[in-house]
Image (cartoon, rainbow, N blue to C red; front, top):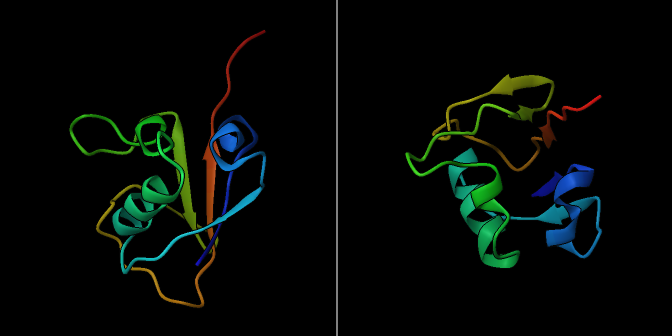
Length: 86
C-alpha cells in the first residue's frame, strides 16, 4: 500500500513524499513502514503503542486513531503531523 508521508518525516524516506508498506491494519502498516524506514514509527507511536497526539492518520478521508483499524488494498493512507511555532 502507498502511504503519503508528511514533510517533517521525509528524512526517514530519503525525502520521498510516498512510501510503501504492507499490513492488514494501520498498526501493521506502521510496523512494516518502520522495517523499511527505521526510526519513523517512533515519531508517530509512543511507548504505550498509541498514536502520538500531534499525529493524524487518515484512512481515505477519515481520521483514525486506533492502530487496530483494518485497511484494504484499495484504501489510501495519509499521515499528517501538526506543527507549532510562531
